[in-house]
Length: 305
Ligand code: DON
Image: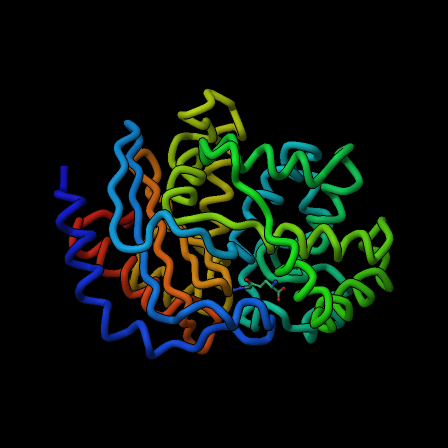
């Protein structure tokens, strides 16, 4: 087994000069308050061993990373019927882009761009009694963290500045691809973005995707092995937006990022790894976090290729 602890500590030291090069997301004012110098990283192996470095236990706004969990809930509810309403192709456009939607009749390219996540949120709202509680419970169980919570201030800040998301939801609705009231869909979407997790939570919380869909902590079968395989494939091709090709090239594992600076990767049958650094690159992915994951797969020699 690679010496994960030494590797994580080395990476923490090596990325220090990068921490101030990224730009903290400021289109959601609440996110702009987070210090750029933060860096954390955690690895959890399939047999439950945890390795961590830096600010790995500090909570941050997971933002788009939660799209993996809402996709999980939607697949649990309606299985492959979901794909009648959302595609599975990389978009090649920014995560909050509107242009493709018109050309493609309100069918979002994939579940990880905002348009796709809004449709997924709509499915969860339509098929679950208490969607927020269900989402929170799933994440808490997967992460083995019973006190994991949301940050209502972030959700409010997103709502107050969520003009693009509102435009997307209205546009999708005009094509008949949203069932619920637009405000309900948006509120649920802002709620999921505002969940607070640490690198340790994320590494633990994504281990079910490295473990054939089964959560090792709770024993829950979250997804079938086949569904877990497919979510991993989607994370590889679409999880880092229009940088997914570059991420696959440099890092070589399924990954999912969020504008809070978190980024989580899965090495099937092996481990989950999460990094956090709030400074983002031009595509909205954590600058030092992406570099940290690249160094991790290079130093350990682990990737899916
Ligand atoms: O929809 C938004 O603008 C954000 N709340 C979530 C975006 C996000 O994390 C996309 N990420 N890279």
